[in-house]
Image (cartoon, rainbow, N blue to C red):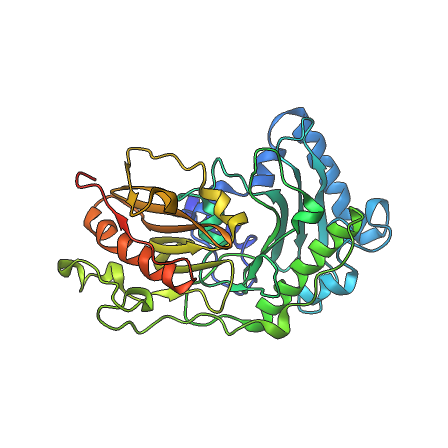
Amino acid sequence: MADAESTENTENTEDSQYADEPPRPWWHWRSLTRGRLRLAVATGAAGAVAGALLGGAGVAWQAEAGPFADGRACWGAFSRDDVAELFKGKTDIETSEVPLSTDHIGSEGPSGECRLTSPRGRRITVQAHRLDTRFGGAGDQWADEYLSPRLTPLGGGMLGMASDTRAWLAVPDGCAGRSERDDGPLVIDMESGWTVYDNEVDTAARDQLARAVVRLVNGYMAGEGCAGTLADPVDRLPKPARFLDEKAGAVCGIKGLRVPKAREDDVYFRRPLVTPGEGPVRTCDRDVLFDHPSLRLMTVEDPRLSALYQQLAFDGGKEIKSGDDSDGRGFIRDDLGLFQAECQTGEVTFLVRADDAEHPGDIRTLLPRYVAAEADRIGCGPLRITLPEDA
């Protein structure tokens, strides 16, 4: 058994951000899944062909032949200097990519993937995809990672966020368009390894990823013939979030927001991290393990992101009422409470979610007060909801 675990840990070292970082444990969820691209390449004859093309693309980047003859990577968005900047000046970076394309019936929108790999063990993965409202609800892995309060809003009217290990940015609707099903926005996101949820964010690395994801979207827009470019966001980025020293009766720093008395001293409610600055989402996470929080309170202010939760099924939940039925709609169950309201800026989603259903009283106590406080904060109040008695 010891030999097997040693083998797994050796393999996972290749996936870590830097060679001198501790390897991911073999049981880490990302180690077990081994990434979407690797899974896709392993399926069928088409996957085998794709794998061969990807391998060739990596060599082409080094040899200045094939699709990278012009010395650019990730669908032409990155120059050699851009790539070197992401890898601390190193230039021996291999690249492989799945070209941007649309499925044959156009139902999923454009998608593609690009990987930049250093021989020292660091890898950056870039994906272009339309956020899927069918799976974008409370348990969605993308929302856990990319709507985390560890990410800083990019500001400047851009729908995007960045940290030192994650960044994402939506392509403006005027360029990407919206599907007939009103799916979520088309986004390009980047990840550079496992996130460690401590009290320090490497702002230099965050700024690099913020600039890089803007370059990617600008490259996509240029390729589509869309007018305009998005500006460098770094000068306006606020300081990263830090864990709050919470006062009694102010969960997530919200005055008057309390937990049940019996739970006040529970570790479940310690060390909140809250999204800094103004942005498309305000998230408060607690006790994060492998990017998944034990408790999340989230306000999704941008209606393009709020669309992620429009199709979330009740799944055993009970309907929530508001003072005026036109105020919105929602439901509550033992592990989740959600309310969507029509505000001046469009649909806003308020969400309180636990990672299990063992303490339904937490959801019932937090949700009404959270909705009221957040609605007042964003100018959508007063908003008062009534929970069903038998929830």
